[in-house]
Image 1 (cartoon, rainbow, N blue to C red):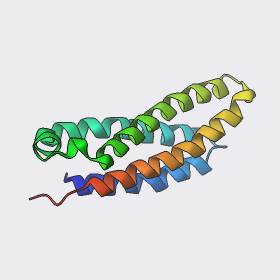
Image 2: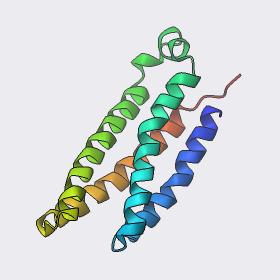
Image 3: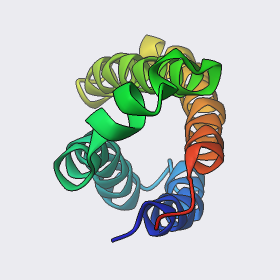
Length: 130
């Protein structure tokens, strides 16, 4: 899959995530969708790393010093931290701790925003492949 196609696939998963967000009252739909999106997001960097020559792009072409590369990396780290916090809050909800609901809801809003920014920054990093 080309890098641009990877961004397209990630973009197509965003409406699926929104659907899962709005199905939050139906745990049998909400949880599998959100877990699948999280797994997709965690595995995508491994896929990209294994299918691209990052030494050429980052070192030889000098993109390692690019503000956009570091912005994308920072957003990815933020996304993964929010996922960890969201899983912890979700587990508390599944245990019956209703006090975790506001935290889970607020993290969800942050996840929607940060994931959109990760996809957008990834799209900006796509270069025409020869």
